[in-house]
Length: 340
Ligand SMILES: NC(=O)c1ccc[n+]([C@@H]2O[C@H](COP(=O)([O-])OP(=O)(O)OC[C@H]3O[C@@H](n4cnc5c(N)ncnc54)[C@H](OP(=O)(O)O)[C@@H]3O)[C@@H](O)[C@H]2O)c1
Ligand SMILES: [Zn+2]
Ligand SMILES: [Zn+2]
Picture: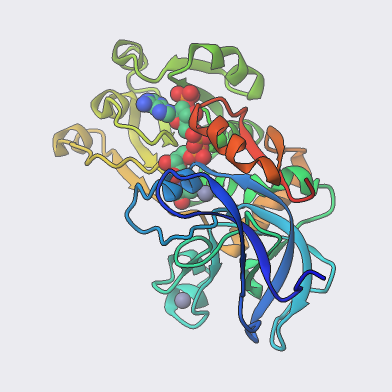
């Protein structure tokens, strides 16, 4: 008989290695924790960067997975607001201190003790995961659990800047990089009422970006084309994880505009103050989002019929799925199905 105490996941033993089955003991369930049987888990580019130890903070064996959707199967004695059997999602974060200024203020994702789901612990490419009750967000009626996983990291990461910057329906917004995050950003901004310009380095994504809801498409690596739309964008949301012609993008901003970077660009960004000063422009960044804004995003998706465009792989083919993402072939987010 299978040991029900053990969790069963897919783990890599070192950077860039294939994942293989791993059984591990999660220990006792904490009083404030909930245990979730994973039904689906999206694959974010951050899973790939962590697998490869690109950010120098991966511990092996490493079980990726931080876009989980599943059923609550156990509740700690002090877990609040959730019921057994309820469908919930867990994203990049799985806990925070709950008593600091940020947590009390509702910005739990900015807590200095925030716990990332796959940093120093095993993630959701597994049959079960645990999180603090506040970080397991119920899925509203009207959202399909099979498609919803990517909203919990990729989705909130591009929804949160819309809230942070108080984006208005009259705003003109650029989205750079039409991958997992970028395609959801186009859908959100289109439903928000904005004029959306998609920036892609892939010619074959031009028509796809228009179908997702973009009004214009510009080649993200063509400095001349970017300079040709100088002064026209109120916000540019960068989801690409690569160095860009930053001066051209700053020039594309209207006065008061902002370049908001959520892609994990490793190279430092050289910017002259004078390119910002005259037009009162800015650069900013943000990490995922708070539990309350995740819930708002889910409600917005349910109301507007928005869902990620996903490709399903059985969890048993996790290595093929990861290679598909590595090859830049995902359209636009891969979801692993636990049953398979
Ligand atoms: N801030 C946060 O909290 C947070 C949360 C989640 C993810 N992330 C990070 O966000 C980034 C995107 O994640 P994702 O899951 O959306 O990845 P993804 O699906 O791989 O999409 C990234 C997109 O960036 C574009 N791109 C890639 N290389 C490029 C290059 N050399 N030049 C120009 N564009 C390039 C591509 O779009 P085109 O084909 O359209 O050019 C690609 O589809 C990753 O770095 C990830 O770690 C950050
Ligand atoms: Zn805190
Ligand atoms: Zn992620």
